[in-house]
Length: 298
Ligand code: MLT
Ligand code: MN
Ligand code: ZN
Image (cartoon, rainbow, N blue to C red; front, top):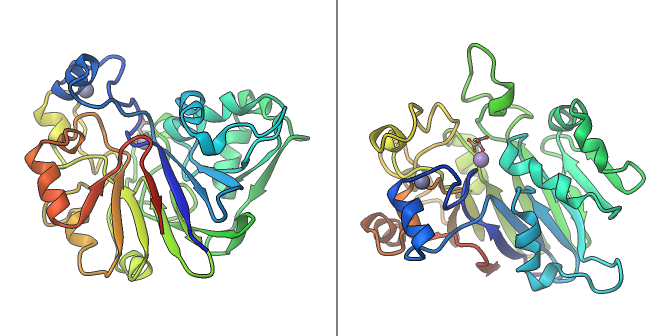
C-alpha cells in the first residue's frame, strides 16, 4: 500500500507572510512575487480514504478547504479520522480549536503533550465524547488510521516557547518533541518538523526510508540575527539548520533515502524563494522544498 501525503502548510510558525514581519520574503509574499505558505501541517493516508493530520496549525480551516481529500463526503462525514501533534508549540496545536464542531476523531500525542493540552481548559472545547485522546508510548507502533501504522519517537528539541523557564535546554530527548514514523506493508515515511540535531540513532532510523519530511526552519543558524529579525539562533529555538557542517543536508546525506522534503520553513529562509541559490543548492543535494498543496506518494 502507498503512503499518500499532502503538505497542508509548509511554513513554520508565523507563516509566509508573517503578520508583523517586513523582511524581504514577507514583502515579496504580500506582493505576490513569492508564493505564500501557511503554517506547519501535513495530511497522510494509507488508503486514500481515511486521513490523519500531523500537527493542527492555526491555518487548518483554509488548509482543509483547499484539500479535496479532506472535504466532507456527507452531511457530517469527514475523511479526517485522526490528528497527531508532535509537540505543544502553538503552530502545531492552535488548530485543534478550529476542529471543535462535534466532529469525532482521535487525538494522538505523548502523555507529556496531552498533559500540556489538558492543563489548558480552552482545549476542553474538543468534547471528550467526540475526541478521544490517545496517550502514545514512544517507540510503540499504533494504528493511526486504517491501513496506516505510526510510531512516535523522541528527537532532540525543547519545551514550547510558552513553557520556557529561566534556563532552557534546547536538545531534550523525551516526550516533548517527537517525530512520526509511518508504515504500510510496503512503504516507510517520516515526518519530523522540529529537530535540534541528528544523533546517530536518528540517522540509523531514517536510513533507507522511502520518504523523509524534515525540519527546514532555517537555512543557517544565525540568519534571523543577521536579518535583524530576532536575537535567537536556530539552536536556541531547537531547530537544526539546513546548511553547514552540523546541518541537516550533511546529516541526512548518504542514508539512502528515496525522497527528502523540507517542511516547517521560517519566513526568513531563502529556500522559500524558488529562484534562490539556496533552493538550487538544496535541490542539487537531493532535497525538495515543500510547498502548500504539494502531494507526495511513496
Ligand atoms: C518553533 O517551531 O520553534 C515554534 O513554533 C516557535 C513558536 O512557538 O513560535
Ligand atoms: Mn514551529
Ligand atoms: Zn518575514
